[in-house]
Length: 85
Image (cartoon, rainbow, N blue to C red):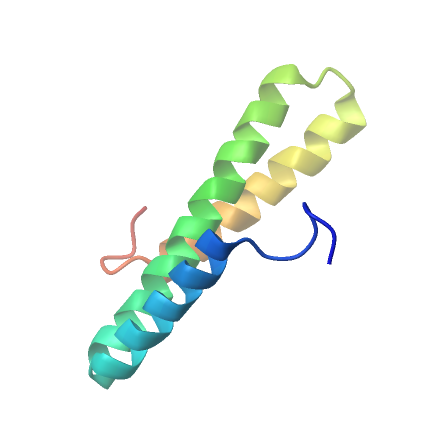
């Protein structure tokens, strides 16, 4: 496999470590870890949309980004422990 393609050794190491942690943790902790991972992904997506909103001047594109932001905020609120972000 050529360099630059596929997964790096660091990625594989992190994946193996995560797999060991998943096997070692009880069900409740694993479930919480999955939820936290989803929250983190939603927050990253939200950050990216906020950045794009700051740069976009096209009204149609802004409308689409604002709709996406609203959906992400709603999904984040549903995953948050106390219903807030």
